[in-house]
Image (cartoon, rainbow over the protein chains, first blue to last red):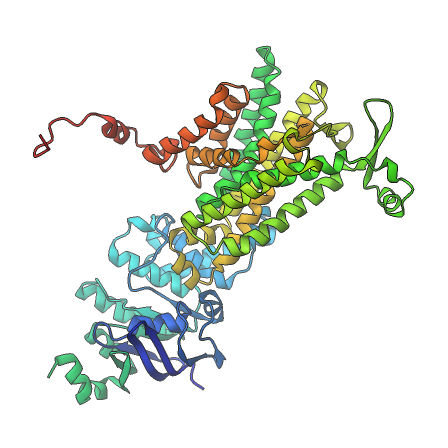
Length: 251
Length: 359
């Protein structure tokens, strides 16, 4: 059984069919990419998978549980974590605190326990911090721990956001255009990092514009065009698919 | 982090002691009365500061919760059940030690509800109202949330003024002191002024410690996350609706507790405590202190409430707080302590001969 199975997914905004009858599967332990020209419906697809929007039609099964239409926090708790195309960090908090929020689904101390600062709460707090630092170290941003997130460079913010998503120890990581705004060297670093994340046993679904990044790291590629799936295969076959070539190169 | 938190609260406790010693030494011992009242109003604004600064939600209904606390305590502890002594339910309440018999002014006996029981009921009522108001209302944002809580405050205010059992325009007086045991009580005139002062500020110190713990905890980080980027908080598994509701209920309960205890201290409560202008005043104090700055809120509350209670603002009291709110929003939206003084002066300075200007 696939880790994620999407069937007949559809979403309409007024007169625009943003996503139309899209089906695909993401196998455990793989890296899958969703590509397509601007307006192909990639970000809408991500919003449907992570609970930020409810689909009009279709189903999403994650670990064999139906998740379509569920609120984001419940989907996150099941083990699905995401980043955002336009980085959404908590600017007034430090980088470490940002990553510690990523541990939210892996910890449990509640409102009242937090007020009382119980021994169990303190212990958990130490664990949260240690786990957050470990992830930051893994991504090479541990030295930024005490810096306010808002003061970091663009590339550093991308890395901290990735650390935050990874701190949740997700089974499926959704990356929404992680290379947007990165230079070529940073993009190459990112490709290596995604390889190492996969090495941790995390399945990755990535929406990306940058074809070179996607072709190098993905096991499978889904191509969307005007909300419809036009290809779903390994990178080599997709690159040679006449429909894809037509969409990307405009003949 | 934790050490500095305890140190801060320790310094605050020292300031409370110092204020008392200075007041006594300078022959202004009667100041302690207004300072004690200030402490209870400070509880209200601390809860509101958390709600506004951390959960990012505004409430113009805090006076409503204060009134729920004050009026519940006042009504129950001044209720006279001595005529119903024979009734089974009165006997049952008496057996459960929920009733208190005390002499009235004319030598008779009044049988009313124990302050403890009334307090418990008041807090429960405040929490229940907060949950039932919060669930629908916290879906709203910004102006709409402000208007919905304002409407709640208006309802409480008009119920209070329009209900004879609650004393209508006169309010309720003759509320007994709150006996805490071992001769310690809240209220009851000059002899208990000192202990009431320390009880009230001790409660503020405790509240401060609990709130500081909270904002440095998992839940507090999640609150900060909601404020920083709500979508990202949700994507990280934060149940934003639940957390906002918890904060709203906490702020409401703090206001209810303050209302109940201050009513015992004052020996009564009047409808002005429920007025919407009181809610505006609480928001103004939080704004002065800086939203999300608990120490800033505490300082602003201590100064402004004390000045107001001492009557320094005269009959312009409400106008002063309204004016303060406008000025803070215009010139120092992050609070007085974070004010950009040079920026303000630049804004106020007359603009001279800007090139390309009219005329």
